[in-house]
Image (cartoon, rainbow, N blue to C red):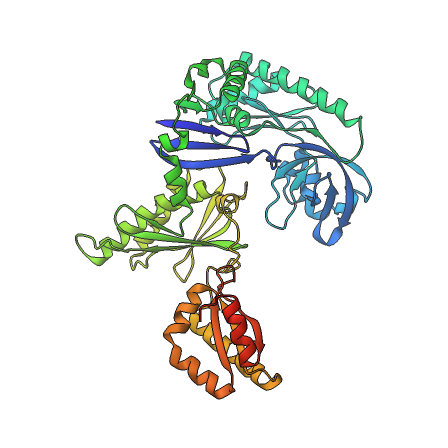
Length: 502
């Protein structure tokens, strides 16, 4: 059973796609940070960079977005010959200071601004209207050649003059009546955008795409989804009205969740979200995979773990690798991981088994709507693949950089801090006339210092200083701070006044 579960809140909406009770995709849209893909802006060219074949466009956001030369060319030309843009300079297409209408095709990720195109696309239920081209395309997921040809012929007859259309996957089996309604809606929308282009200041937003819930109804909610469940009465009514407009036959599949329990708890989603943020993911057999991501790429390591198999080592390794392919595909989809991905499967001596694992991985990835490509196995036995970056990763949406380790996942151990303490005592002994020093450390560090009392006494004797170490729970784990230093009498008085624990 396939379900879409929506937790509509005050600050953010969360939408979960479930397959047989398992969470496979999670989307989050916050009120103060709505998704930008699909939005259309009238902006101004801020800078042209011939060396990068790109231009930076000011659309009124904190970061300028960027426009590659191939995203600024007519789609007809680009589709006929993908190499044509190599002979065209970005300076031939846009000029600094020029006003330009662009559409966001990729969210801002990390330090990079959003990516935009001048090839505007307006998605409907069954069709995508492209006002600036005459291109006709059919979704690659429609595999029947006869059906593809039928759809192409029907769209050719319905296509508005000097406009292009892409037929979406859900259009399979539909007829002209369905397409006509879509075209009417999209043409009306385009006329409104054309009017907005001529009004107002620059830069500004001239068309905002659907929000998360409405976009999911338009793009994902189909006969393959058994239930669409929403826990907010207002959003439920909006969803009903939109489905009535786009696909009335699916209206009975939308339901309102009117329970006191949290909807994500009820469907077991919350616990699955917590698990998908873990670095280590256990397989049902007892094996596990480890996922580590950097700015440039993601590394996945496969291990047998507690799985010992039933026959021999070769069989154990092969079965673990095969099981891991399904979990890897699921995690890439769920976590929104994109870019370069390196997978270190457990070494297999049989070349035929290597190919079977790659085939299993490709099959598991076929369920993913986001385009991916398995490039094969390197001489080191590592599988290389890529997955298109379409959204911010789940880890970045739900987590932030640790203020203690600064993203490394590591802290200085207590003995490294003991070394730091020793060097600070030597420095104070050489450069001051102090007789005693009060240090502050994190309570976890203090415990180790107390266990190494003999070393502290040696440091005191070597530096001719008396040290007092007190806990400060607000102090960073890696920090040792000098609170005060002076003669013994003044230091002891200060310790007494503050009820300090030595």
